[in-house]
Image 1 (cartoon, rainbow, N blue to C red):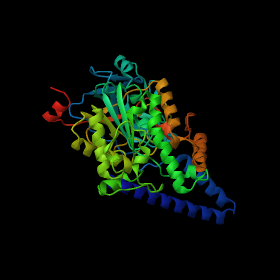
Image 2: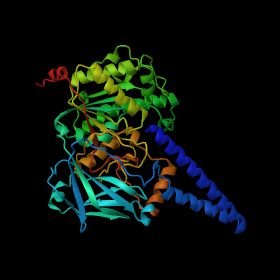
Image 3: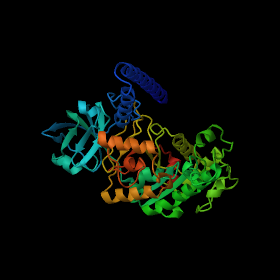
Length: 477
């Protein structure tokens, strides 16, 4: 999968270089044949067009079909769009996660303005120039869907009259014991604030300090290493303090203190310590002093893979979660996120406690850095899956307006999501607002305020096999 994405990225860059070379050649010809001022004017207009319409990082073709294989036995029902209303044939549980598989085709205007589908009062955006199978999220729209009153209409795109409704059944995981694995401070809030703020029994473990890329603190006059240390302290504090806004006490939050972008290297050399790339520190105990329980890594303070796995195994045995939330190892490409889930799986094998299921989340994507696309506050359609993913279930709980605002405020407390974006990004947003109709929320300027504060949260459900010994340990008959 990653090899194909590397090929797509290489092809994207080659195509972009060819287009730029052609544009420059045309500009030079124009400058020689018309007048000297036409060259800078042409280049300026070309740059504006690029920033407004062609700057999205999309490493697949919008004409590709998404490909999702749901677990065997997942109920599916034929659906038809009749008079602008979606009609489903058959009886289904409207309280469950509802995913509509449908073919969507962009209009010509949808190559310049974001095509989107209105689902009742919800909106879900798609790629410009979309032409293929897509998966819309109808979760929370069950009553209108069963009544046959759910309106479905495309804006800058057309919707095929025939579709398929997939109904994915799950318990309410918010009523089970949860452990959230967050590679960095803010990952738990981005993925699952709505869930954990209503969960009856939840704990959060953050694996890294998140100390690198501390330019903002360097601008305050600090030396690079000192800036990284300050950022690490602040984000470690965030990982313990911000969850209280969602009702999770500090005693239920754990900061492990490993170093950012070092987890993958740790996995390749399990006994070797990997200190910070920027802060000069290599003792993980410095940010563990507020943890409510002792862990194996507290002994020598070495940032090693073996300590990380042992720490997670100890947390599994202490909190005894029925469900663990962790990054999706196939969808989320961030190296720390991939390594976090790998460490969790090794810890599960080492631990005497085995959870029943994983809820997988994706805060980053390989293919599309705008997903979830569209404005804040609306729903989350399924992300691009050009190659089939594992046949996991899906669970997509809904967030009401009050919870969405609380989630935005939780993100605003995260130091890494504060401050203004670079000037170039602000200028690009201004051009896209004026020329492409895009909007950003007023709750915060970081892109995650748009992407994460949504009508839905989305998790892939992966059940774990349990042996009779595991059942006895879990207290099950």
